[in-house]
Length: 401
Ligand SMILES: Cc1cc2nc3c(=O)[nH]c(=O)nc-3n(C[C@H](O)[C@H](O)[C@H](O)COP(=O)(O)O)c2cc1C
Picture 1 (cartoon, rainbow, N blue to C red):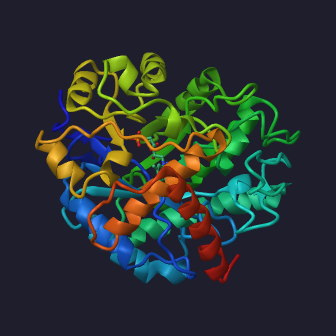
Picture 2: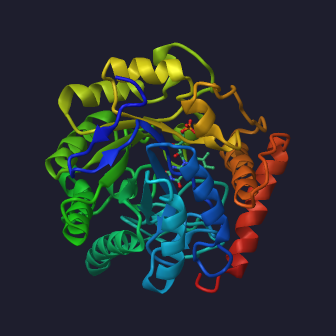
């Protein structure tokens, strides 16, 4: 087994190889929450790279509940723009799936001064996030339908699958975690009740898209916080997802309060165990479940990829940042012409590290979306400031927040 082998998913869809571009929020929209030319340029370029799977960045369910002020919303009014985007993204016959998400309490004050969540637990993050109000039951049911309707819209637009974002502390992850879900009704308390929102989303989405359309879930192995969603709970959830026929599970970890998925280690070519942040957990998943498994976070070398596939530790290799360090990452990586360099961007101020990291890569996304080459000489401080300014300016332009 190696990275060039196809994989057939439970729904029957086939990925032509095992390399997947993991989701990276594009932040491209300008006030109208619609995909635009930058999305088309970027995804056409990535489609040409030959990755078996591209997963879009967060696409949101509703205006006002944005993970970034530059997000797009899967809405019937935007179907023409989604069709153009899907056409570019699938132009070479590879899969492109839309990541569907609701930001919940991780919606910044630039976008919403009264976000919603499972409960009223405020995010502790530099004062950028307001205290959320708990969702009412009728709102929870409406959001489940919204996930399903959005997935249907993505299918109708020409995308070839969807991924439900249940990781990184966004709304579904807020329901899963005992730290953020303090509800005493059937949507909180026991693990079974905390998982209900996710499972109902999967059931409704399957109903909406039919049996042959891939549905993936991105799930935290753990929140990496005391009292949070932990590995044991995650393994229990995974068995439920497998029983529902989820086509690809992507494992990651962390939340905005502890961005383990971005900062878990220095990127380096290294031993099998040290290269992938979540490999230990993946091995536990493998023991307990046969759900197709994608692992993302820190993976860089072809040597690692092929060894991990050969040893049957995972099924699909997820990579994100390397796609933004080179103009044509996947083409050269798959041709064995490139091992991504060890690249880190740090301010030295703990509270700002994830912003510098996200800001730096957002600058690269913006360049690639304009057909400009990547440029790696932005400083950490400039990158962090870029992100804050970008979010503020775009939020002011949004008509809907
Ligand atoms: C700029 C940027 C944006 C990201 N946006 C998303 C996102 O929209 N959804 C998501 O699930 N993960 C997102 N991530 C996390 C990546 O999908 C991935 O889990 C993380 O970068 C670790 O993989 P890597 O070491 O290969 O970069 C983002 C990461 C970066 C760098």
